[in-house]
Image (tube, rainbow, N blue to C red; front, side, top):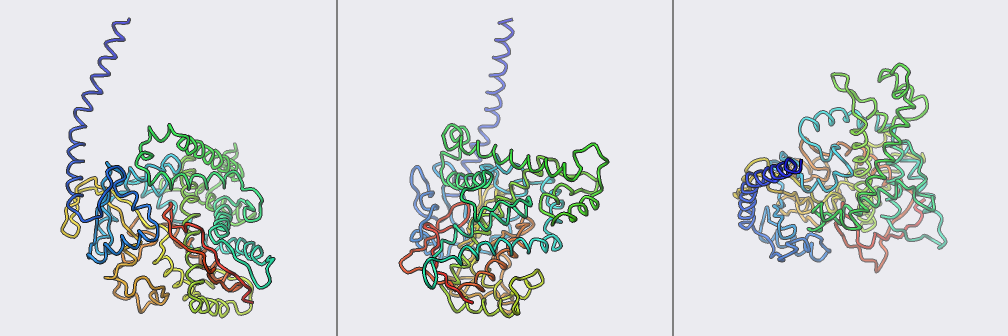
Length: 511
């Protein structure tokens, strides 16, 4: 018996060695080709261990130096090293964006958050992505989005009431990311689960909300550390164990909510399963339809729906993408309006013209908030919430005369694309009229991509823009915003673009 076991062990070891001998040389050769290609590209000097990571985790001053280096030398793409072993190409010009967006999502980079988000739309690819994208599209139909406007208004009203309580005569100062972050979470929890979290007024955060916040922070720190990118090392650390435990908590909560909703809809009972239309009608009798309702009732042409695991992945993805990105977009918009009072006043005049004495905006009002939308878009041009996205070349690409080999990580530096002087006049100035239709004629479609582009553009962009218009318009209608003297606002890249010390603004009544 021992002899047989020994033979099996030898056979297994031989098989492992054979696989390594077959796969390792091609992998090493491919890596060698990638390194040679990257070395031929322009870029900043690299550190022997960090590569360019210490420059990618940019403070405001380094951002300006890096941007000046790119624009003064008229570079359309540059090379970077994410630590000593991870070469990458970064695109800074809109003319090179199209071919890159057609490539696959980078499995190594997005794989870092796969333990949390699974195979949701952000990460999945191929036929699964096509099918699930088609099934989820109805969740963002205008009939569904229209029902969320009441939630936007209710959540914003909570914020406005909080800000109205001021111990100081004439106004107060508020931290935007703190306040808007809670508002955005409140919106997402209600739109995703119909869950009243009361997170804006509660003295302690709901466990699920705390877990989501932890996962976002842990994800941000992992992106910028070469050692944390190695799973076997990361999960041996206390931070890795914290990330794994937080993933488990998020999954348990999502699964519990899904189970409870299926029981409500009769999907897990012994009763006859209702048709999709009957399920939705039953739900509408009690409340608005939420994201989870749509996921549970989605069916493809064969009558097959999403599995519980697929539903959980999409709910977690929606929470991840829909919270921090909208928070960032709204905070930078309010910052720009506080910094530019003339633009703020134009927004206020437009909002009041649309409201005509009413207290809240409805869905039909959104199309009338034209200047408000231009103001939001211009803020996202200067401060794109998602400032960098990653792809992996499916084959050899030729970009600006440089050959980019198959398998190379290629990133789109959205912040530089949005400020490139080839595309934008006075690119660092805030000017909402850039987005007046007459000023958009002839502009490259990839010159402005805050929600990515191509077929894998953000499915929830209308959801986000509707929320941002309602919140921004309501705040500016109620309050005058101005910057706090002496408070330095510095951008810092986390999962999304944030401010190092939050954004502190003064508010006073505009009524």
